[in-house]
Length: 356
Length: 266
Image 1 (cartoon, rainbow over the protein chains, first blue to last red):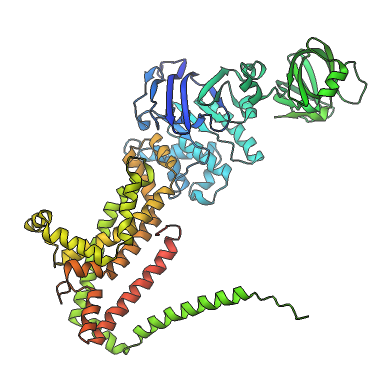
Image 2: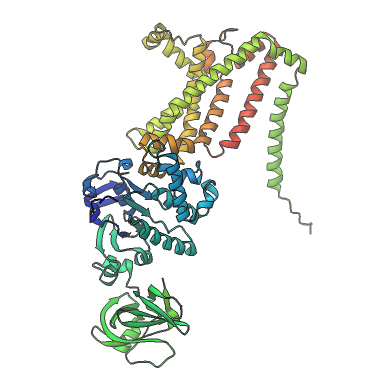
């Protein structure tokens, strides 16, 4: 194999602005590492889709520039960029068979027919849609359609794959399977993926890096952990929530899992081994001044490091080695005499520890 | 207490009216078709004059339909996809021929091609539209182009532009994306539009009469033939023309209903 030049940055976006009526981008600057799985998180209407459409070349920015492997592509039409895009509603061509859909981007004039056939077969096998090749898209399920859309995008061996909420329209089970599939494709092909979502769980389970967007602007960039642990603005904090998401290694023993998160051991009734992401709802955590004897398997002591007033309820963040968020009523907050720097006990049941 | 029946008055009355209307339409059609005997009908259809009328009708309507397609595809695409200055005004103008009586459109065309320098230049260049079969094509085109345009505009509006976006990221130019994706996806609308335009073209009378006139064996399409033969008492020939027009209309309606259910004409 010849040595290809390695670029650390696959996509660089510098000061890009674009206005399309209600949707807009405002002075976006972003670097996306080659081979990374980059997430873009934001609420509906944040401009996430336009960002992808600007990267793929469908809309030219009003100002600013975009670079692919250090070559400027701001004014290059989409077909010459070698960047593929998958929309949330699949956009499979209804008048073509699955095979023709996947092969749409392979030009029979440039690539020999046998090779086209081979590449379609390979990608179809990889995504488990080989049995669908002769069907038309109309009657297929959402999961099948999304696989075909991904196959169609990947088969041209693009430099980057842009995914616009690829999992949002699917049911929970299909979403789970397809998420694993995306991880597999990313590992196998090493392709740079930019994945747009409004679901922070996806960010945690898929992304190497994440950019949070709001009202057409990037409000924070970092690893998922950084963004969740240290939200830099109130918007990020509220949007991602300090939802007790933890990454750790899980081991199963005697019908329960023990998840080690930075040295803290959390017990769950769900049995799963290996690298995992777990969550505990802040409402499920019992707060007390002194240790409570109970059947609950998880009990920690820590110091209150942050207090967020939400009106009738109050959210406190307690540092027990790792930060836990808990929600209590204003009355219990006052009755217990809690405050910043005060020590508190947290107790929650193993059955309230969920895997993501 | 009276026994409660599960029959609503409004249901009965409304269904009665729909049956009455359907019956009336059917009687009308049956009257035309059964006015002569079958052998007489066949003889009439085989007559030289009727053969001429059929051929001229087919030729002019097919040419005018093709012209309607060629002009409507880009027009409908522009008005479905893009925002530009004067768009709503253009939409209104393009719809106008629908509301205009064909006779009035015919007068307009006659004045345009018969009296203006533009018409004279065209005639000098060999394109004479006044009292010629070419005039029939032009009359059919102007009266029927809104049908094709409206159906296609609705069809293109119903196709998400993101299909083209995806095609472009997969190596297509804008034109290729349109050709390979949008146009095939618009197939049903195109078919429905062509059928309705063609069938309206075959039946076009008012504007054609004004611009192309009613000259036997020259500008004699089926409707013109019906009119000419009716006026001079050749009832069998008139009925033959009418019967053919009925068959074409009903056939077109059937195909249109089957493929064009989604398209809005009005």
